[in-house]
Each structure stands twice: as structure tokens, then as C-alpha cells.
Image (cartoon, rainbow, N blue to C red; front, side, top):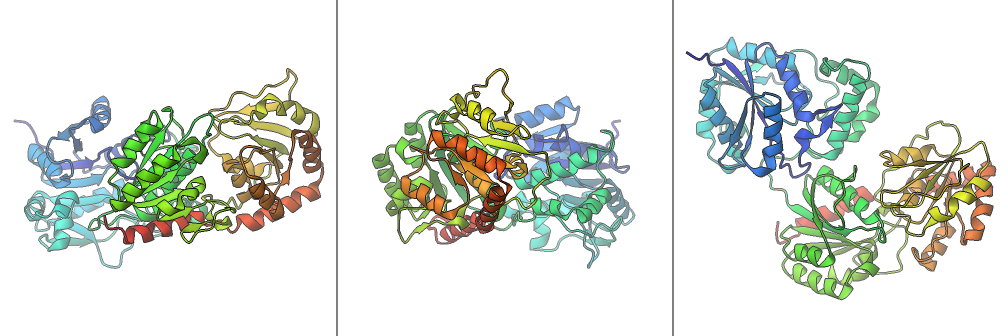
Amino acid sequence: MINKPNVIAVIGARLNSSRLPGKHLIPLAGKPLIERVVERLETCERVDQIILATTHDAYNEPLIHWGHHLSLPVYAHEGDVNDLMGRIDAVVKLNTPTWIVYVCGDCPLIEPTFIDHALQALQSHPDSDTVHLRDGIQSIHEGLHFYSLKGWEKLIDASKSVMSREHVGYANREKTVLASLAIDDSDDFSMPKHRISVDTMADYQFMSAVYERWYSTHGQNEIVSLKWVQRTLRQEPLLLTINSHVRQKKPNQAYPSVSIFCHYSAAIGLGHLRRCARIAGILQENLGLGTHIHIQGEKIKFPWLSGNVSWHNDEAQLQTAFMTETSALALLDFKIAAVDVDTWKGLLTQQHNNGIRLIALDQLSALHSYVDLAFVPSFYSDIQADNLSCGWENYLLTPVTNRPVTPPYCLVLTGGSDALGFGNYLPDILDKAVPAEYEILWVQGPLAPAPQLADDSRIAVLESVHDLQNLIAGASCVVSSYGLSLFEAITSGAAILLLPSTGIVSTHELLALKAQQVCLVADTDDAIERQLSTITQSAATREALRKSARRYGSKVDGCMRLTQAVESLLQHSPTT
């Protein structure tokens, strides 16, 4: 006779998350997130078997393969992919346990001692179907449900509605059917109360920071201590801010989706794509929305691009994707000189008539008559319209408040593709004009050719920079082309020299920027060397530039302003 396990822990996981697709396989300190969940369950004394419950479809094949590679029992459900209760019930019927622990696969800080504690309480009270924390107890625990077999059977019988099939335990919230035992916590896990599930990129960044800190001083065979996490969060409150803004989705609320359309190339640059990736994260975290980015350009893996993404070979394919769009809202971000404006006017008109809300970003504000909102994430626009929003407050950037203390260095930013070819001649000027006490760091964009350096050049070339804002914040001075990096530098309160910008920015916009006095401006190639000498040799000039940049950077609130605009449009959308 085969011995059936008394307690099974069923991990629910699918790679189809609307806000962070593939999240279960993203790395946490070198191992997939879901493997960190399994490691924690393996330390539980009262769990006899761990089973991964996913769905049988192509999208989740990588998760199934991972489970098999780890020799973890995997159940791939062939029924309705949204029927989570049906998926777990199939696992229960196959294993006939006495007790069931359901574990959300996106919670890599589940506490083993609490799991054992809750199971012991449930096993000691055979008349109870489930457990809950006693009234008044605050706890950091997330992603755990405990049931006796008879309690589970009551719950599955009561799960008739769509919501109760998609969310474990929801049926008991609709109508109480379970006898629930009130228990104390296994320890004091009350402070600080903070989300420890991974639903968005900000959640992942928070969890990565926690895991990296732990494993910098502990061995790989030690699971992250939840008590240590709470102590660390109290000692380093800035960690809390990484994902404190994330809105938790409510199970009884439908969330509309937003589609984002942009392009990139060596000629266009990366600014539109980087900005759209940032917007996707903003909407996922602040509003709980699912986002889908449609990109015209060569498919390349960028470290800052994640989530639901589709690639299109040319503008015609991008236009087709736009016309088949059924999302409640679409946002478009193009270099206007690089698209067929007349065709887009017609497409925007058709989709607006179909009830889709439309936002045009930046240069596309020229099409303000065809959209609901023209949002310009810049201090300047030469267009005036009732539905146009612009100003320093609109920048989609996060100010850096702490300037790290470092040896002096000059940071050079020529853009994602170095579209104006500064790499052909600027290195010689830098080697000549920048004082010897400065290190010179040249950030080579992913689409940019390597700068042409002399054999004895002092310039260090950096590729694949993942933390540009902190690199900017630590620089003694920043030499930048006109674009996103320039305004990241202004927001960070840097002392900046702007390189000649002919063909990138209008004369009126450049004059308006000069009037703000947030950077020195080299109008011509001949002026670069003179201005470099000024900014590197005059501490008073650098401090004056930083002071002015900080004044304008402190106004930045574009993330919240765009969030509010999208929320307002969706509230009045005929499709939501």
C-alpha cells in the first residue's frame, strides 16, 4: 500500500502574471524566485510533500521544466486556466491528504515556523476547518492558507462564483461555511507591516535588495530570516520606499489593461522605449493595471525591459497591432519625424471612435486634436491646447536625494545610440581639457558604437550600466547630449555641460533651457573645450549649477501626474 502524505503544501504558480510576466523564474540572489519558496517549505517539519500546481499550456512549459529539473512533483492542470480552485482540488484528489497548505508562488518570505505553528493548531483541533490570526494581531505573513481535508471539501463545494474559483478562500468571504480556529502568531511579526509578495517590478527590486543583503553575509544553505528582514527594514527605512507605493489588487475588482506603442533604433535612439518601460511600471504599481508594450524595432533583451512585450518589424506591423487593440486605453510615444503622421491621424480617429482612450506623449503632442490627452514629460512645449499637459512637474523620473562621496570623476552620456556621433571626436577633447585629478567615465549606450580613443586615453568606457542614476549622482560633473539622460542628471542635482544639440532640439526649447540655468550649454563643437575647463575647474560654477538643478528637480512629480491622468480617463472610459 502506498502511504499518502498527511500534509501537502500546494504552490500555485503561473507565468502569465499581467503585471510581471514570468516572475516565478526571475532570479533572487542567484536562484529562481519560486525555488526560494520551495527552500523555505522544505524546512517545515510538518509538511510531508510539496507540489507545484500550474497549467498545461505553452506559456508555462518553462515552469514545468524547472519543476522536473528540481525533481519537484508538478501538476499541470488541463482545465480552465483561471480556475485556481479546480487546479488545487485536482491535486488534493490525487493525493488525499489530511491537511492542505496553499502557498502563493510569489511569496519568497513565507515563514516556516508560522506554517508549522498553524498546522499544529489545526491538527490539534479536529473540529476546525481552517485557521486565522486572532483579532487584533498584525502580521507580515502573506500568501498562506490552511485547511483540513473536510474544510477543503466544504470550500470547494461553496466555490461557485467566478471570483471564488479564481481566488482561494473567497467563497468563505462571500458566505461563511468554514469553522475557523483563531490562533496567535508564532512570534512577533507585526512591525513593520509591509508587502512581501512579488507582483510588480518594484516588488521584485525590493525583494532582490533584501535577498542580496542577506546572502552577502550568510551561506547559500541558509534561508532568509523573516525576523532579520523586519529588523533590517526598521534600521533601513529607505528599503520600504522601493515598493511602498504598489497598489494591491482586490480580488473582487476588474482591472482594465493599457497598451503602449513606441519605437527605437540607432537613428531614433532608446529614449522612447526606456520611457515607455518606465510608464508600464508606473501604471502596474500605482494602479494595478496590466500593461502590454508594443515595440517597433529589433528584438533585443534590455535589462530594464520586462513584462508583457510584443516586437514588430516595421511601422505597418505596429499600426496593425494598434488597430486590433481592445485595451481600455492606449498610449503612444514616437519620434514624430520618423512616422507616417497622416496615417496615424486616421488610425487614432478610428480607435477613439471605438471608445479607446488615447494619450499621446512628448512629440506626438502635435496630434493633440486626435487624442484625449497630450502629455509632455518636459519643461517645455511650443504647443498650447486645453488637453495638453507639460512642465517640470511632468518628468517621469525619480529624484536622487543622496549624493555618494566619491573621488572626482567626469561622467559622459551621449545617449543610447550616440546619434550625433560624439564618440568620433569628443574623447580627444576630454583627454585634453579635463584635469588630471578627474577620472573620465564614458557610458556607451547599447546601440552606440564604441568611442574612438587614443592609445594613451584616460577614458574608461562603461557598458551595460544598470544603476545610471546613482552613477550620475556621484559625478563631479556630467557631460551630456540632449535627451532623457540630461534630465535624469538635472533631476539628480548634477553639475552638467550640455553638448551641441543641433537636429535634436529646437532653438526655442534650447533658449528656454538656457534661461533655467540648470546647465552650461556648449552651442558649438568649438565651445566644448572652453566650457569643460569652466565646469571642471570652478567649484563655484558646479555648486551654482547643482543648486539650480536641485530647485527644478524637486518639482518632479510626473509619475503621480500621469497616474492620476490615466485613472481619470479610465473612470470615464466607455470600455471599462
